[in-house]
Each structure stands twice: as structure tokens, then as C-alpha cells.
Length: 243
Ligand SMILES: [Ca+2]
Image (tube, rainbow, N blue to C red; front, side):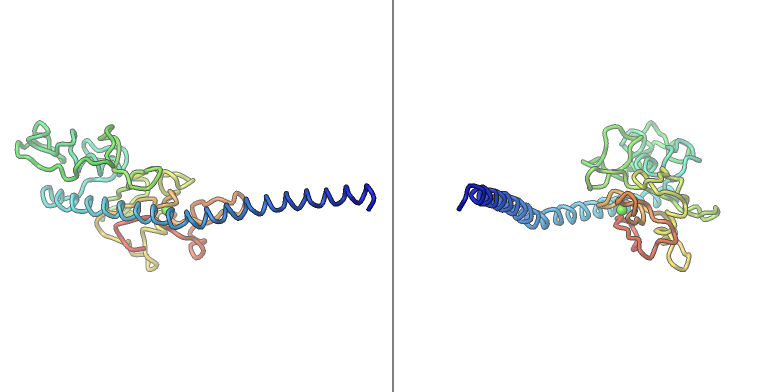
């Protein structure tokens, strides 16, 4: 065996050691991934369950508010004292101007005008999901990072009955629906009927994007789907209606 063949053997051994280290690192990563997958999944399930629970509490509050005042809180800004967006109005009207409800604990102020010293509400209790900066803030969902639960009230005499612009519009889908068409992919059924006649509550769900999404071929990232893409699009939003 000559010096050149000895060097070749050393090189081969070195390459084999490197390959073994690479294999070991890859195997370790796969083991960690397999080990952590159920953890990620269970966290996601717990966040979805907590968000569904918050939606149920909001629905109870909205029913009580409707019982007391004959209407649901508005979701657009065309009303006395209304905030710019639906998610802000949801929190403001259910909690009252100071989080203490309406009437006697709000200096007599009533949600739709007039005064009354009787105590009304609050219809949603402050909790961990409530920002201290209310009433401008909304009610957050339980996913990370948290986002406000969007609120849309039906306006039966208007067209459209549910207006995507009652909450922020955002072409990326991160802060709200990309457009009215994008919103209606979720808010209308295949036969064109709205999913509900009273109000909609929508959390962006685990992907943190509102509405139907597809994978963008160029960027490799999720983006809001166009109506013609609905067949291959998916939506994991947590809502007060089936979709
Ligand atoms: Ca989503």
C-alpha cells in the first residue's frame, strides 16, 4: 500500500465520519419533530377549544343585549358612539363605555341614546382576553399571536347584508378579509344564502389568516384565495356557523 492509497483511505474514513454525523443530526431532528408534533397539535386543539368557548360567551352576551335593547350591537360606524370597526363595537357595546355596562353604572348612558339609571350589563366580563386599552380594542381569540374576533351584524335592508368593510380589509388576510368577494366565500353558502341572518363572529384560526387561503406558487406562502380558487382552497377559521 503506497502513500497515495493511505491518503485515499484517510479521506474515505473522514467522509464516512462526516456522513455518519450528518445522518445522526438528521435522525435526531426527525425524532424531535415526531416527538413534538402531538404537542403542537394538542396546543392548537386547546387554543381552538378556548376560542370556541369565548365565542359561546359572546353569543350569550349578544342574546342578553338583544333581550334588553331589541337589537344587536352595530358593527359599522354609522351609529351614535360606534367605533370604526365591528370587533371594536362588539367589545364596546357588550361591556359599556367603562366596562361596567350601561345605564346606572355608565352615568345613565344608554347604547342607542337616551338615559336610564337602571343597571344594564355588562354583557361580557373582562378576562384574560380583554385588553386593558379597551374600548378601542376588541375581544381576542386564544391563538398565538392573538387577534381580535371579528364581528359583523346583518343589515337586512342593505346590500350586501353583511359588509366585509365593517372590519379591516387587508389584501394579505392577516388583519381582515381581502375583499367582499373573499369574505363571501365564507359568509355565503353554495346556494348564495348567507350563513346566518343575525351576526357573524370570526376568529382567524391557527393559520392566523382570515377566510379561505391557498398556497401561492411564487412565494410558497399562504394567501387569500380568489372565488375561482375555492375548490383547492381551505379555511380553518373558528366561527359561530358551520363551514
Ligand atoms: Ca384561517
